[in-house]
Image (tube, rainbow, N blue to C red):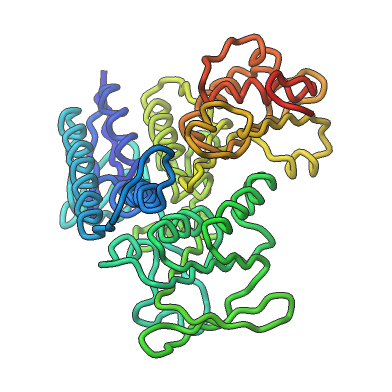
Length: 458
């Protein structure tokens, strides 16, 4: 049988997952990555951000004596050590991915790649031929058209991860996932944080109850939040910055030591030969079908560059699926059920539809909510929040689960499994959940769909 050769352009979560899975299935795989393997997520995104969030949250609990029965005096934040731990964590994980690629026989080139045709790619000075090409070039920080945004010292998320010390005051432009995570992190280490979001609520794509709960949580941590506000200019003011913004027709200004622009991500699709080959783009992202095929035969696009779901775990799933598709296997992953996590304190996680989406569709649904103030494990952890389940009115099929509270990012995968199996609230209720756990609140939320929680009052 003929050996299939595949070239993967990009070594982030989508690219390395595709390369490893294709090699496991018997293909000869070449991967080109001009930077470090692991992409944005591993090097300047998910991993370093979560490392610093963990340290910041631990510092806050120690400094404010938030753990009952534990008194800590003279707590000091060693940001330099925090940065070293972050860098060491990233280095170890990059080394792990590199070793996995090598172990699976993937040939890795640390060079820039350009498509010459649908079966030919220039990698550095070498031209490589393949039966299929997988584009996995990821995304970059979006750039806004705001006067003064290019001033020296105005940071993006990459720069914010490497600051030598937390600023005394910080203004964050953007209330999406990136913005709120940095707001949570810096406020925990005593930075005075102001956050400006253009839409009328934080993380606007999330369920409205999650958005409101997060706003309340950040406000309790001292973060000043302005939603429905437009940043109009940034200018230097002494050693810091003056940021002007407009809300409800009123102009205001904030004087801060630092500015972070967290305006989302844009697909990396320029400079790799797509225009010349006529690969179709939409709003800068590569158009694909349900199998992630582009309009160019045998050329696929996965991960952030196709603009479908800008999440590392979705990118990895797409990578595995594409490898299986190219090599004649039927992909097993359910791409319709994709959880999303936000690592604020408390954590936030969601999967499935929001109430807004269901209301707009005209579908009939039921909602069950259970407050974690009545959950023993959450009380022990000293954290509150809620679990919200949205179910189909007629059959009780779970359509969406939204959690704000301790371990939310760990619990959401259980909800995703339930939804992948088209599970119902009755099936959740009939399953005995361990006690005391935060997870048992999922069952209580399911009971709340019928107005009959055991540990709550409706």
